[in-house]
Structures are given as structure tokens and as C-alpha cells.
Image 1 (cartoon, rainbow, N blue to C red):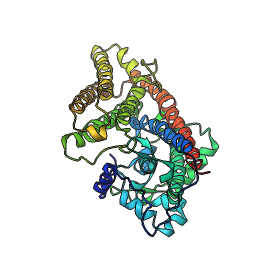
Image 2: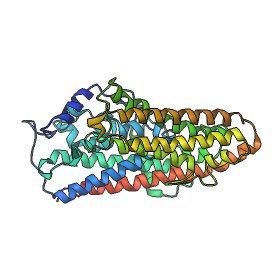
Image 3: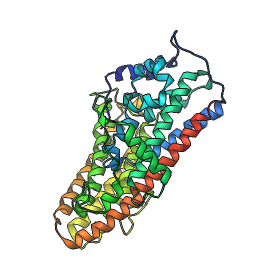
Length: 398
């Protein structure tokens, strides 16, 4: 669940404002406009969307490093705490040492959405004539930190620790960042570096006692994000319970975010990035071919409900930031609820095989494929795209 900031009302007001004044246009600020080109800013915005898609494609597996190292809230807290960000841009001490400040700053001004707030307005790249030197310095530091966070995710799931550079980034990240509490502030150390890829593939050495436990975590991870998309990301604004709880409102990227979240579930269940059908080492393939009619029927139901949920999200009226009360939102919420129920039934049946050596052996195959070809592969692309985003943001200024 994303951290909810006390200043979110101010953030939404800033979003719906037609003037969209710069964060750094106060009288006591340096409002000097950067020297750069609109083409460079447009490229940074395009690369933000690419990096954003990679992150959303990882949200079916926010357990492990993303949770233990507080990387999820550190990089993906929303709504943006716009007033807090304005204060930072007036804080000479913070601005003079941004790399260190960002390691412990409130998560509501960091990550994808801190960058989004500066880069976008009403679904379009901002005008280069609106970006100040203070904003530029800030987003460079945030983008660098975002890359380091994603490199840490890759390293923490790389069982072979094959990328020495990113492994070193991970060691430094874990040593210098703090755990994040429910208010978005740092709270204690992150502890030591752990390799979750090794632990997931080697039951009894980490968080998963058996291979079946780890396989059931695949389903649980999917259910977590399905519930968040349906109940919170779409549901809170749609029901009026919290109309400020809108993800990616400045880039008008909300529906794409929702869709990519469910794609992450499809990848997890089908056993590969971009898989259109379940591969032979996937959870769904095993359940369909395990010789159990109940399990096979439940797996088929999951696939049907999964495709229905993706279609329902794709059919939502866009942009969500303006049409969050449209009836198409309810259709998507209901479809996601049915998918969640179908996964719950599958998990219950599969969990009944605890202690079965044949099932444990098949789960081991599923888990090794999942760790390498879903989680690690996604995080590797995520880190690559975050690195490209960082370079593009640096290049905004001539």
C-alpha cells in the first residue's frame, strides 16, 4: 500500500490548477530558467513513461527486497506532497547536499511521482521555459536515487550476483538508506544486504520454508496488487472515499499504470515477461496439467478472469484523473474482484498439497523460472530503463 501524505489535498489542488505555477517561483527562490531544449525535455518525459511501465510491471512481486528495503514507498509514494517539495526547493541546506538529503527525505517528494510533478502538466511535457535550475538540480538527484533503488532490486534478486557494479550499488543503498514508516519518513536502518533470488529458489534458507510456500507467494503477490488496483487505486476515487488518491495524475498515466500492474500478474502466472500463453515452467501450466480437474478448472478460470480484467481496465474512460467517477471504473473494479476470487480459490486448492513431494518438486521448477525469468528479468529491465531516464534528465540542461 502506498504511503498517504497529510498534504495530499494541496497536491491535488496543485494538479487541478490551471496556472500550474512552478514549485520554485517563490520570491525568495532562484527562478532562473535552465538552458535546454524542449526536445530534450520531451525525451525525458518519454523515458519516464518507459521506466514507469517497467516499475508497474514489477508490482505483482513487491515482497522481498521491494518491501524489506522500503524501495516501494521510497520510489512510488503518491499523491505528491507538493507543499513539502516547494519547501525543499527553498531549503538552502537540502539543496546544497541533495544526494544525501534524498536518502532520508519524506517519500512523498521522491521517486517516479516527484519526477512526474516537475516534468508533466495535464498529460503533456512541461514547457522548457517553466523549468528552473532548482527544479533541474532536484530531479537529477531524485532520478539518480531512483536508479540506485532499481539497481538494488536487480542485485537482490540476482542469485548469481552477475553484475558487480549494480551489486555494489545495492550494498551502498542498503547501508545508507532508512526503512520508511507509514508517514513516509525514515525510521531505522535497513539491516544488511540479502539475496532474495537465492532464498526464493532454496527453500528453508530465507523467508520461504518450502517450495510450495514460495509458489503460493507468487499468487499472494498477484492478489496484493489486484486488490490495491481495484480497492484503492480505482476504488477510493471512484467511490468518493478519497478523490485525491489518484496515481500519476500529472502525466495522465493512471490507466496505463493500472493495466501494467495486471500485466505484472500475467507475467508472474504465465512464467515470463510478455508471455501471451503460460510456458511449461509456469504456475498456470502446472495447475492445468497436474492431473487434478479442480486445479485445472480453477487455473482456466484465472486465465479467463485475467484477460477480462485487462480488457475492463483498457476500456476505462481516460484520463482517470478527470473521469474517476465514470461507470467504466466500476466495471474494472468488479472484474478485478472476480480475478482476485479466482486466484484465492486456486491458492486454497494448491495449498492442500502441502508435504506432497511431487508437488514440491514441480513448485521448485516453477520458482526457479519465476525468480530468474520473471522477477530478475523485470528488475533488470527496470534498472536499465531507470538508468536511461536518469541520463535523459541530466541531458535536459545544455
